[in-house]
Length: 518
Image 1 (cartoon, rainbow, N blue to C red):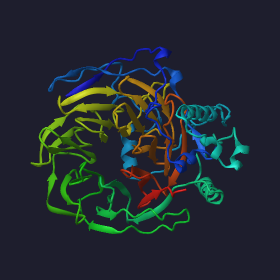
Image 2 (image 1 turned 120 degrees about the vertical axis):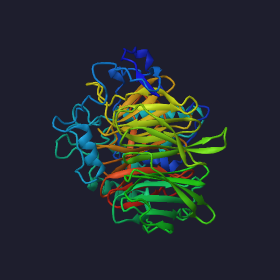
Image 3 (image 1 turned 90 degrees about the horizontal axis):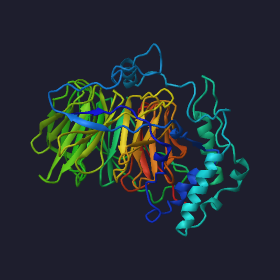
Image 4 (image 1 turned 60 degrees about the horizontal axis):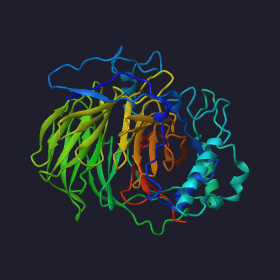
């Protein structure tokens, strides 16, 4: 089944009403130490809201029956329209090089974080704090603004200064990040610390927490699969010394190629992994022994690298379904985990499928190199909507979709793109809320925190960035760098219940980060 994109139409400014993830009644004051990450104006940088460009609402008009060719709309298809990144570099060639994790970090000549004069005047940040304080006052909560360090008060109005030259245009340089971290330690400001670091001999592409939160799995380019214990955090301190995690299970040569992706079922009894050997492996997991057990099932229906996998629970039949997608024929396959048989192939994408995400129920989203995000419903066995997130409003261009996620209520989609952009999309309203750039290179991973108050992104600029989603999402959003690797950051995953996360990188490590209590 395929879906089609309706042609662009103008939107009135009234359609850009404010958008909040939570109402005032249900909202609550977050962990004080987490909120204080955003208190120091020297550490915070602001996204640029693109609502002034009148982004169009893009929705599906109808579904094309299986076997029929997808009708073309507009002057050119997403697949044939070149990305306006470099006049001499094609999207496909560039993406294949990026998958090797050996090319240089991409740096744009200018970023959305830079104001016209190259600096910030602090107005948007102050307005964000005012909005947040009004929200707290409406709930009778204390003024968190007064808990700031006195030292930051003298630095208001100059949040982050960015270099506009081609040579140095990163959000914060590696040295600046180390300085900020050191200042946090001296001034008592909270910061994420590296609790454990797993070292491999090649790039580590994926890591996923078990739903219980007691352990996590790690897959790497070395073909090695590991399952590690989640440590106790009760005694975590800011001067913590990073150590190697306890490895509960290790399998070398798990795939014939690199392990690109992995997923657990919601109850944690099954694990799936995907590889550039074009196979998916499905395995039973015993949570009591922390070991894989029984005979694994190898799925061979893909004819290209398997880029992502996710599980969906079929409640009517009391079984698990595995969704997998990747390169090759660009199809998304649905496999019955009870039989190990793929029973459905979903067509529609014209480029490699790079990311999949399920937020409960029979719906899931897919992002592709063809620059589109598709929504699928297994009850109708087809695509129910297609959007093309606009990452460059001035030129009306999109960019390959490297990562997607949807917050638990199903209202908000966030997509991460190869041009360093993130797009917030109101699913029910069928409108883009804004585009922002928390990174200076590909955004390869996006995840909401368990409460959906924060967004964690990982980029090829080596950084992991936390963005505060409390407040009006049509306005500029404050972001702060919370972790950094020595090479490209490939993925970031939240712990299911605690405010900690895993990151994987081309620097051959997987690191567990946590915020010490205050």
